Length: 293
Image 1 (tube, rainbow, N blue to C red):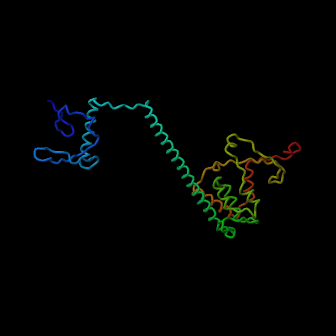
Image 2 (image 1 turned 120 degrees about the vertical axis):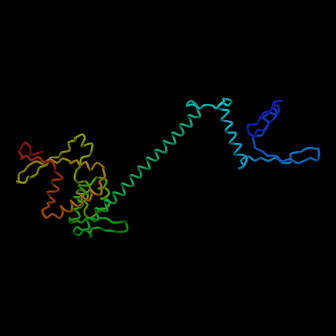
Image 3 (image 1 turned 180 degrees about the vertical axis):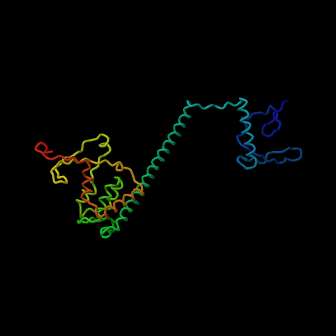
């Protein structure tokens, strides 16, 4: 009679006893007790040891090797999953969706971080601008703090601080200008706030610059020789006003330049405003034909 050698334990067993389907899917040990002299033995206890630390690991390791061996010999066919497989396709699409959602979230968080960094930098620059104004004449009396925070209180009588703010505003990009205006109180001098700080000088937008829109305005004036003429107002385009931020080094340069101009005894604020407001000049003596431009 032929016997089968078990690949797990190496024991020999008659082929006639081979019936794996009847065996439990478990790892068990049994204990025996004697029935008396000449009467044999009987099972006294049978318990599962599946998952123990001593016997389960070597058995599992051996079964794993045996499975791989049977696959190599072609005895066990492992199904090959292809992209056409429905379950595989669902899993791939789900993973792609998760990756896309994660990338989108990372992108949004990155944008939020950049925005917070930019706002923090702008707040630092606003603080620098106002701090640098403290050495101007009467500036300290116009910087007010109350329960709502601190702000600059414009004076009805123009002072060095108003001139400083005006010149600074003409140099700042729009985002920094808007933030600085939040710290300026307009109640005592609304016309200066609205005209000289908020909307002056007139600036071309990027589309206007690209399309070269005609925003010129003609008006009568008098030139430096006392002659009547026509002047042309045309908006000025400043690339730095296109929404970009400036560095603190550039801001320091602007502040230093503005304070030097204020302290220059020959500085003419009227000419400064005029040059900013009317960069394109066309001097034409008025005649009857062009007296109504």
